[in-house]
Image 1 (cartoon, rainbow, N blue to C red):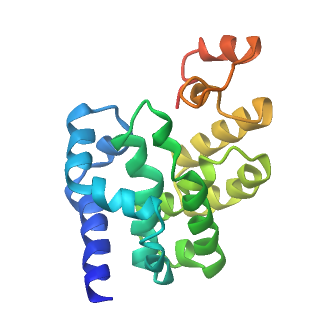
Image 2: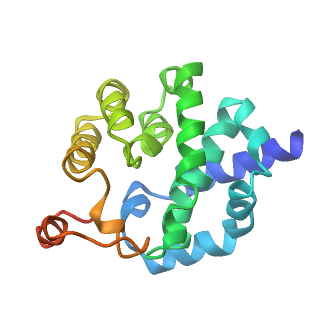
Length: 185
């Protein structure tokens, strides 16, 4: 268990101490490459379920959410693999909410990442349930972003910017939407 704690701490330290918030959401090939180099193995292990035991403790659970939700989006940017961990990340996030872990977390940035899989869900019920959590546990900018995600799911039932990567056919309304500024997130 001690080795698992060390590995989880390494993930959390990298994300919240060594990295900067501007790196979390920017398209930065150098940062993506760094994640690939340092965390590809752990991300693959998380995707295969090998690290599920991390979810029994808050710190390990948050590290697991990062490995399943954020790291694939950067390691496999612009590929279908970017979303491979979404179902597992969503399950971890929902368990964390049930256990009160985001509420108990004093740092806003960590609370935000506990909740990110809810924002990434292509499920309107999850999106609706997530909004009060984002409003309560994050800042207004993040809550606004969560509302934009919910609005897209309410309108289309999915995120149109994922369609091509996931082999889904976009309809005319989705194609028109993708031409508007800020539609790709």
